[in-house]
Image 1: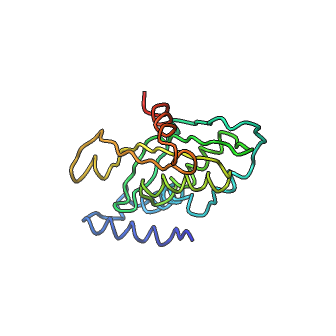
Image 2: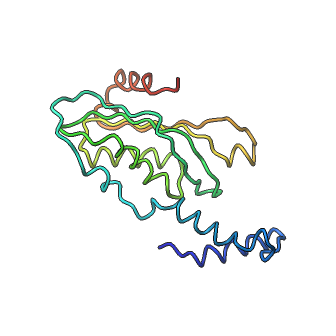
Image 3: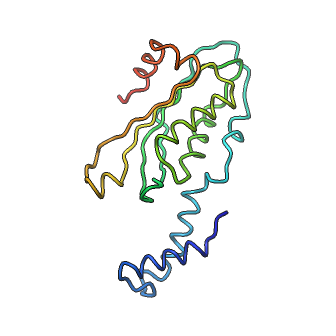
Length: 186
């Protein structure tokens, strides 16, 4: 589990490794601050999305539910740099719906982990499909990755878009295209 002391030691070594004096005034509390930050950024590691998706309400129709523009912040597991953007979720109920805030909480469970966007997209879709028994699920994630914007190729503003489709939405190309049209950025 989370080990604050190890993170503090690691940050101290990092500071020393780049040639800094870890004991100087501006840096002496940095290992503690960074450890607390990572505790927050990785809070989803020990959370189960089923906790949020288990409180449902009866729904007698199978009209599509869409929640779009769910803002998220995550940390890339390759460079430990942020990536952030929006998640759009659509699902077809199978006798039950979940409170809309629970979809955003589910996004947070997966975003608050060391992560890659492709995996996060799939995990959100699988959780909704499994926990709600939805007839169909569609998840689209659009994000900017700081590992590409601030370093390396240095292309700020570029976005990566991933999506996952399950069940009826995966099988029906017209339905999937209609949902993509509804959730695409304004």
